[in-house]
Image 1 (cartoon, rainbow, N blue to C red):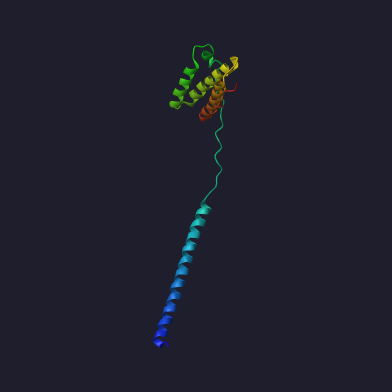
Image 2 (cartoon, rainbow, N blue to C red):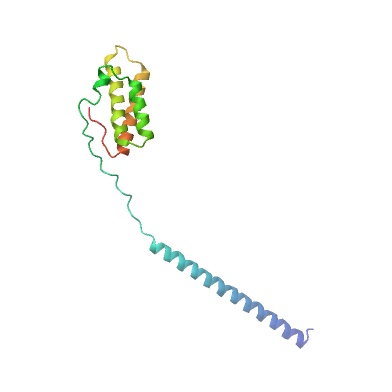
Length: 146
């Protein structure tokens, strides 16, 4: 049989366990409330904004004789491609847009004037049209209308 002293010691231990449990539950509740408050505060401050609209592209206003030398055979398609590469390396989007337009014109002449244009000519024309769209848009311009 347990003595009175042993019985009181057991009561003290049980009370201590209950007190520790209550303290831990209260601490967890406080931490949870703080975490919820911080999360709620951050959530309330988050402002959802729409993505910015892309800049409006403007027509280039290119001269009609821009690619005239290429048509007359004084400048080769390769030279136009080199001019394009130089303009893009210098970050001159306007000049790059103009020169890539001449390259596209050159490939269109190749495709339209040859009796049997090759698949490579059609592939190059499509590739350079895509480059023209991208490069002109990067400078804020519309690709030339043909």
